[in-house]
Length: 278
Image (cartoon, rainbow, N blue to C red; front, side):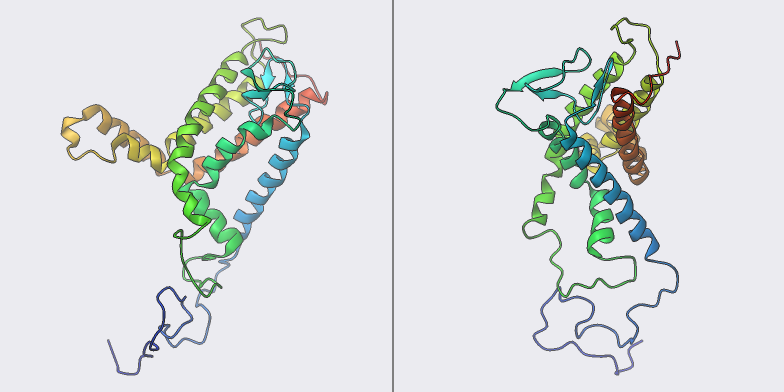
């Protein structure tokens, strides 16, 4: 109920000026939360930072990414002439001998671009690294808020195009997983511990990719009459159920792809031999 004592907006106050401008309620405290609201964004930032450090190290390492029949998901498909000899996984020497850097840098831009522009990851690193906002009911420290309307954040709108690139990458990783059912001599009928690691990873990769908001929109976002498109309606419902778990799948697949790469690194560097299950 208005009492006539509320602070009035300052004349000429620009929209988007933050919560500490003249339109803010007369509350002395910065916020009224008494719980450990900072814990979630801090944990998120720590988890994402750990993956960034690890993936950067592995991307530039240019070594220990292949051990028959496994190839690291960070390096597949291998598109450079300087790839290690591979009979496991796609090895297309599209880039000639002039490419002297790690071949992982040629392919990682697509799955990482897909995750970087993902709706959930935006929320995660906006809050974790930029404090925009740090938590619900906690004001962000920035004086102005422009959202994703200006460069460089306006580029987040290309997320749907990264989705188109992420689907074939997931398909190639599926092919790598099928080839993981061979032994070191490329004979079929093998299953090692690495095979299970690759199976877990590809299931989570597909679940995360298909739970994407862009996928849900592509499947049924423009339909006006679901009754006239029963197949797409069923697919839309299925993707919607996955979408409800998009955050969980985002983290699970992030851990699984790093685990698959680390497993290949361990056996390729000679830390241990891949245990054979049958």
